[in-house]
Image (cartoon, rainbow, N blue to C red):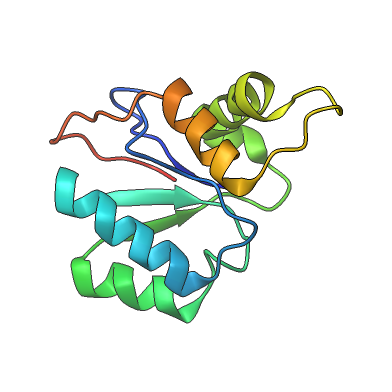
Length: 126
């Protein structure tokens, strides 16, 4: 799941459930976000392969966005997203094992449970 959090407003302009993301998938998702919110000054990411990809590096360079990587093994450096992801798992994804959800069900459940608005002038973080 790819989640984007605005550090200023604490709202999420993007929650995208999927089984996996590559660098190009992240770039496409970020392009969707910036078409609605504007280009951020920087984004904070971990060291997942989708964030260390050449596609994201080129995307950031072309738009003048600083990529701010957390230190490996230090999730507290990006505490807002870690907290949000924990709440998202608890409220939307952790269901009794008797429920077998499809990806469509997951997208519907996540969409109903998250705030999707954003303050347009605030820098955001993934």
